[in-house]
Image: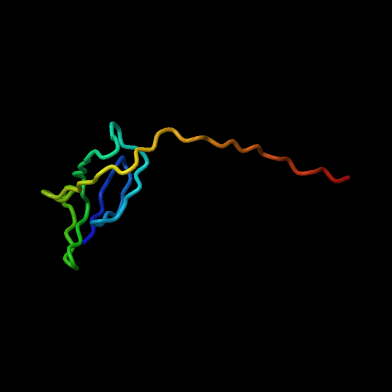
Length: 86
């Protein structure tokens, strides 16, 4: 069984027992439970249910936050110019 869920304007494929990497969830701490109700598609062992308006009614995804990633160290790239050959 898997579902397609919309989180922060992006679509993710979620399966039971699998980890899901989401870029940013507001007010999410480690160990917190988060619910997502914008389920677009449900595949239950070959039986596919597609949302009509555009979500599937009564379906939701419940996740536990494993790692709340804060600001990461940013790397800077310095563009290099090509050598001039005479």
